[in-house]
Length: 460
Picture 1 (cartoon, rainbow, N blue to C red):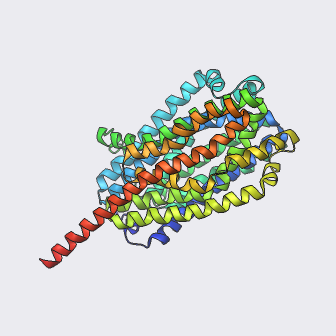
Picture 2 (picture 1 turned 120 degrees about the vertical axis):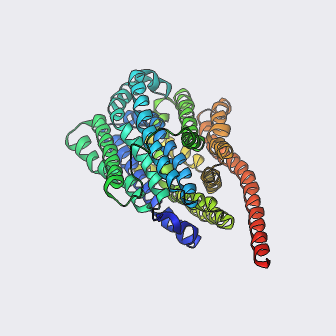
Picture 3 (picture 1 turned 45 degrees about the vertical axis):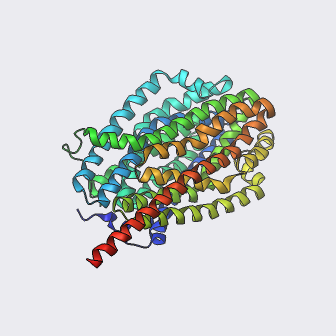
């Protein structure tokens, strides 16, 4: 095995971060553009209830498909450290177990989603006039979820293997396919919300197909073999330990959506859910470089930690946080200046625009702080420390945002929901800073010990 990822331990950190973060950011950008285009077509050709239906269904979709993402992230952490330690056998077995787990669990949860469809939709806020369009959208999207789960798992494995551009295309392919199919299905064929659902489902299938092609015929050094797919309890436990962080995060986000959508419906009606649908789409779009840096730093940290290059680990985290914070601050300024123009892209409904503009500004108030929490939790995930990674991952949504969304509207009504977001960002950043400071101090001690050992060996 030539170990494509070996350069993680030798190349300059800045160069590595650019090589990893830029493709990841582009992939996320294109995915977020797809989300925005999808919402624009639905908002303008279906209406506010169409946006509300997507807002209800997409968290359910991502909850089920996050099984693949969790297995991908957990396995990628194991893979990166195995590659750093030059353990080829463990790398192959890890990949094989990821494949088996992803396909089995995704199909099981899709079947459960089909059986419990109406109950699940109501829990996630599919109430009143929103229920019927949500059912129409979800019944089609379900077919594509196993393919999305496979694509999300593959994306993380390919990045850990040292092929960031291929990982980028796994995100770009479905976005491009969706952007092409949306106007054809929604407008030209006049299929409405059903057309949006089929466009999305076909795009998931295209992404999964591209990932399969890379493993079977591309430059991947990993291969799907029967021997490697035999369940290995040790590896499965290791994947689950780290992957559970991602799954818990998505589970917490889904719980947040349940609380959020029901609070929005109670204090602002169906239109308030449409407002959050627009805000949610913009969240991913405007901070895509921050998410790209977060994704990009994971394999660099994992490899160098496995290779015991402690100073490189610390340098990677420090550079990632500085870069992401600068970008997040620029995003904050742009959001505050061009709020009305951004909202106007999605809808011509004046009531919806009037409700969304002040809400958007409140939600993004603490944007400059988000990099600390995102990269801090990614650091602990990359080095295999599941407990702090889990705590930091859940800190914003679980520890702060869900309780705040429940409490703040009691005093400030609908505005209280929006005010909860920046308060949660501040709290999560503070908690992450404390943990990250302790983690980097430990790296400093390990670096000093390593240098002492080198000097001692040289003197002998």
